[in-house]
Length: 476
Image (cartoon, rainbow, N blue to C red; front, side, top):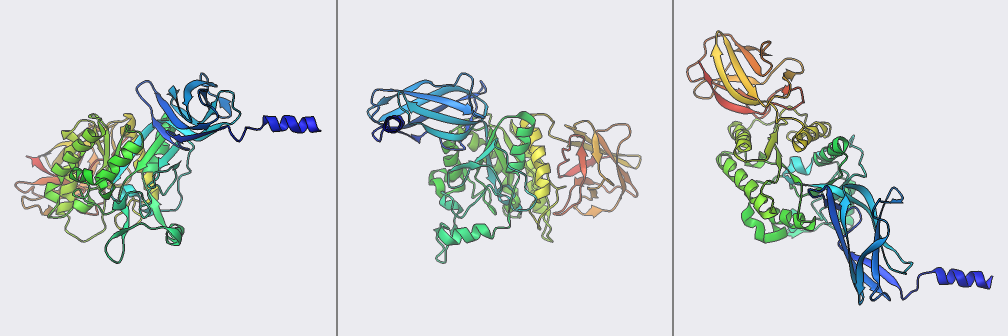
């Protein structure tokens, strides 16, 4: 019995022998893959009683060492500090990284690592996510998120949690008007009572994984009710006291390289004062992000603002929607999709169920498996029919139920009730025909989705929607 006890004692790691991972990798971290479909994982730490020894590392997936990544020398202990590096780690996971000093029994590890694509989520409330926390999509081990306290976690809704973010810009203001972080019992109560928070980020990531098998990491940065001025690149030097500075900080924290940006914003700029300047501010923002991220061709995927159940003036709302449509054609690798046909969970926020639809549309753009969707080319009136031609159509134009959404306006912008039927042309699936009853006014224009709360339902066979547009001149 004494011999058995002695052997058991000797098998235990010595108290003087220890090894810890302190920097470079954390549970649930996602690494952006490079052109070779792989990434380099670097870790640093401390060790006791191992000076001069080799540091060995391995990767484990599904309980087995990854091919080519069983125990091998990856660094060296210098004094009490060490660093190690694994190169060409293939896209995939979840991985467990294990590290030891040669001859040691003690093993340090981090788990649920992924190598895949990182996407930044930014904008205002429809990107933050204000959908009902009901019927949520099931999370996946292939989707993780850098939460707003800067900890890597499994990806699940709600992705955004502003009150205890590490960036002060997201904090609520106290009675003195100063930003104050929510913590303790107040934070616990707020989390427990939360009824809203579903967004498009998770459905997008799940759809990307379903189609490609490549893991996704999300970097939530959105904040409801924010304008382009609040997202101004000029505020970058304020760091976490500004939206733009906080986003850049988190981009760098995530590794300094991402696959792209998902953006949904514009509602706060749909006013007579801000609307006219939106187009220039938005284009300037995209250019600045690409420069500050050091990725001049960074894909920028965004959503045209949708519906708002409101009696407020719609001119500025439609102005912003048209500005978003224009920016798409001004900048390379900028792709827009629409959601004016989506269901809402309140007067302005996309509903949880249709975030799944929107996620699929954004995935279409991200993967490049579909064209942008129907884009208006021109309208011509002849023999009682306005023919509206579209480009970028996947397959052909289609609709569920009676086609709706088009309206004719006079030179002053007033709607004129002339259209008695809207249909896809039987001769050309890229053309919509509007049957007109009455005299077409001089200087007539066409709009699709006019107003703040239109009913529109024109899509193509890939489910990509026609955007809100107009006024477009009607040639006669």
